[in-house]
View (cartoon, one colour):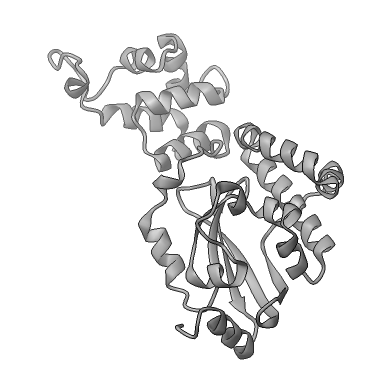
Length: 270
């Protein structure tokens, strides 16, 4: 489907009367082109050209206005951008409270595998009991729930890493890759975090200036846990459908012995 065909289909589905437009003397269902243009605050001529495949590629701002005018859902908005620009829109940052309870239930379905959900700036917004037991996550201040702050500013976290330098370089490079994919909105969101870390951690500043990028993907992780000793896990990262501002990471114990160590940290209740 072309962009113009999609626009025609979407505005034909809207109940014009429900938006206060007169229902009489309409030759076609839905909103008229000029009404969509008015709601989007763009010229009727430009909108007509878009429907006709003329005038070149629209800007992000124009597509955002049209998405609002047509009252598109998140999936429909993404489809509009894919048709118009060949790429999805920049992520919309949403409040932590908007996290789906179903997503938390997915995390809780892993009895001995630490699992978490993080934002593009690596703030933790959800985790399960194994993650709380292994990594020490809790309901403390917001700054304690940022993975970068924990790695660079928390001596206890630093002491748990078998090779802190490699871990730190990896997460900084992965953060930079996340922000590059997400676009300007995410970079703006991360500015205060980066400034603060540079001010308090010379190591972070040096690694950030190195400009390295890495994909999080999957791999292995080893911790020197103060209670159970060496703990080996394998991790995989996943996108959260409909929430491009979030990512899920699941750590599986590498061996049955490692699973037993997680159970011990959880009080033997898993």
